[in-house]
Image (cartoon, rainbow, N blue to C red; front, side, top):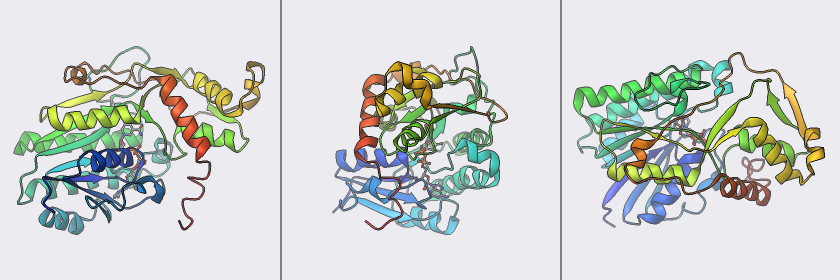
Length: 333
Ligand SMILES: NC(=O)c1ccc[n+]([C@@H]2O[C@H](COP(=O)([O-])OP(=O)(O)OC[C@H]3O[C@@H](n4cnc5c(N)ncnc54)[C@H](O)[C@@H]3O)[C@@H](O)[C@H]2O)c1
């Protein structure tokens, strides 16, 4: 079959990548979707089960830092579009093992940029999925795309370094890049190291939600379907060389989040909620909040469609219906 477009998604077996791939494969049967992923610990083979037999979907198991492999893909597969999501993503781990974050997030991005930029076929778009954490946390300021980068953990420092490489390809070669900086994204199938699935999983195992430190932390949460819609809109309408915040006005204090999840998962009255909380020491530097404005993206027509109440309901329901999804990941299907 002749495909109209070939899209390479890196990190397509991860949380956001798998939702993006499912949308691309199902909405665009005449596009070929290639997933380059080394299937790290945070992936489940079930995440892409619904599309794995589709004729327009291919998985290449491999490392984005492997320049031989990546160059080969660009020389042989006629790639038109790249969504670059592959990364090491767990902030806590980045304090313990910063080197691997440097390798994958910075060097891996360089390998991809170099291969994509020098391929015979001109790339239509290179979309780099970055994070609001590159702005550094704040207590008051609202960040727009021109705010200075002040990453304050090894993970966000590597994402910022990768962004600068991406922009340098725009400056030097007018290579058609777009950068997205999103809030915390949540939804079904997210690995249990991230805060929402971690709390749900702890509660499902009759353990308490662990609250780090005593400072009032909060996060802006965006449902994964809304993030995917933003990425697909930017592919069609985003301006090359530009950066777009992808955010939500839904700011949820972590304490409130834990209480809400305790009530939903354990089905207990208010008077028993505290029995499911445990306070633990914080990491050295606490990120209080990351408010961003996304007017620039909204001018292209994007609005978050899924309310917090609906998104968290869908998420909790999914984890309740799939309690063994992550614990069974290493077992044969
Ligand atoms: N989840 C969020 O809240 C959020 C918010 C903003 C930005 N982001 C960014 O979005 C992207 C995806 O995040 P996610 O939450 O889906 O993360 P994830 O950890 O679920 O997925 C990361 C994916 O990258 C793959 N990967 C890791 N190292 C690789 C390598 N060397 N070669 C090939 N593949 C490799 C993993 O196997 C996995 O499939 C990341 O770049 C992240 O920085 C995430």
